[in-house]
Image 1 (cartoon, helix red, strand yellow):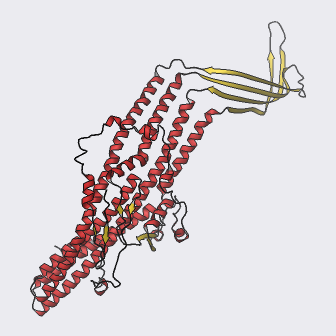
Image 2: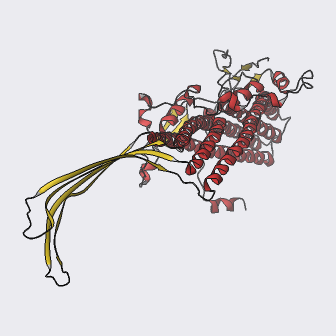
Image 3: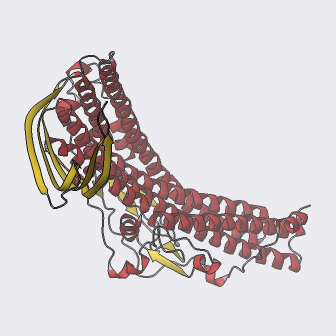
Length: 557
């Protein structure tokens, strides 16, 4: 397959670039005429059990392990205590805007994210459950002690017909000790219960890997969104600065008597539009920063910012077919469904054990020490003492021969659940392929969008420059300048959207396929001096006061 190449160049603070090879990406998605007739016999395809085994184990080596500690530069950004709850406004007031790179944000999320910590503890819970199930192979020993010591005092008067009564008294202290040792030699439910616990443990390990992959995708998506809104804020600032220039020129021409009031009003209208765009982008920027702070669980008074501008992360190397096959091999979701089949089969066997015999060996030891006498004719000798001990060894068997069909019904239910899991596997397989294909198609679309929008930005920037020259020469109206400026702003925003969507799609393909075959873009060959462009500093944007909604609504009525 032919690989795509990218060339990136900077013009006036923007980074439009051209991605070649779109046609080759299109060709890779088309069916070859020579192979369209030779369809593959689906019955000859290997099964997931043959490829992965009936009880696949989680393989943490398939992805880089999660970070466990933060470097010294990020040590101050450790997560607050899990149960901490601020109760004062000063405790949630933002005191620091912290620039972070994508790698630093990923590291912070892996160390701080509470969701990932919870999933890690679930793995330990499943491990403990497995250890509890394995304990059924071992004997049990119970110790019992009654009366340490216990005292008995009393008297009994008995009468017989025609005889005088007999009086007996009891004054005795006793201490009893017993030990019971039991060991199931034959237990039909033991092996399937341990197998089910073991598969549950492996399933929890897969859940941790899935959570780690999803967390990294969420971090990358949130960071690229933040870069998107940062760029859009810059676009909004440039648009407002350009509108200020247009408004200044329109007012100067109006005062000179060579322009009409309409042109001034058009310039003011465009300035209001650009200010509204800037305000909206600032809103989304603030929200995306706090969303990133939520994912990384930063301290309450810290807000992260993007330390680098939006740039293309690279070029996806694998073909669509390679990506689909890799997703089938690496996705732990499929392994989990196979483990569900194994768990249901083990539960079915455990259900049958309810009507199968259990054979155990036991050993019971009892000991008693006493002092005094019980039911003795007065006087009672409290100095008398002694002890008894006995030991019993034997085999015991239990067999629930008939339970009304309960065990057999539970067996059928679990077997049916295993069959249902097989259909869930087929459904999940289709969803995984669709995810990869949609991301691959989106990548191609975003790739083309970057190419077209970069051309649009360049063309529209030149059109705006010419429109201003024509307006200053008196051969064009303010409407022409306003229209070109609006089109430039839209083109710049579309370019930023395409660039961010492209990077997010690359992250999705990494998540969905488990591959990291992304070729870096070639290094930029930039001139030593930056080209002259519109500088925001030359036309500072004054902050707009926040007018209450009720008062603001009266301005347009």
